[in-house]
Image (cartoon, rainbow, N blue to C red):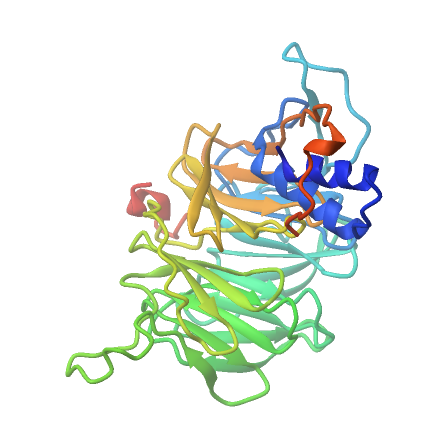
Length: 406
């Protein structure tokens, strides 16, 4: 018997249950029941792979997508449905787009897109041309650009969803992280600690000064941007090999190209080219030593992880070749393998308030994943137990995808 059915039946018996408990139970069952949407699909507007996606946190309505063709598209995921297709699905069309080669646009691959956390009037993009751009959504024009980045390629950038400081952390093919301030138009300072390219970044959802970074040097580092140094270099062995003569602190046995904080901010999930997933305690910097099954990770650049925010169990969506792996973080298991794309998946983003996920791939599509209809059987009240559980081309024309062979 499903947990939410137990809760409904308990209410029939007069057992008081907090509203949020039933909501989270339903959300959990829905996220575990997720599949390729039978009702909705997005218009295909990209001519090459979709590398970056973001849903605005202010309204939870607009999906921003960018990728290898240098184009940008914005979808209104809550727009009235169009006429149904022969398949019975409704198509969600892009409400606006920036074409490849547009004035002010990117010259090479777009690797990261992000909405301004508090207003859909602004969004940011960065990519393989080494430029970080701040866009005016209404005008679809670049309002500000940070282009003098060392190294020449930006793998990732990130803004905090809660911070008042408004800083944008930038990771590139350089061992330093730049912190850019849109209000002044300059870089405030740099964070030094990595020994090679910085591939992925994430801000804590509960601490506006806490930043996590992952690099090609196999390291994951936690930073307090108010201090000169770092807080922790995360050690996969928790210091147990510190006495060995060849000991070098590493977080993975290979490049680390993905990370995300869990919604409670207490744990960090990382993924690397050693095909491993790791769970870290943010306060102590310790590896929780949770054993996860191998997940194929052949990417030489950042991959974008999606994480559920509404379910009781944190679920992380990890691109893996043409599949998406659903990982039940605390259980340490693979909950499901989602299949629907025909080529390499790069990005996953989960709706902030709904059990809905979007994914971008080299097949040029953005797919919509949503729960299948849940059947609620009739339940005899007496059957219920008393106790219930709580989105590059280089200058020479070669693409990094060719190099990565993925």
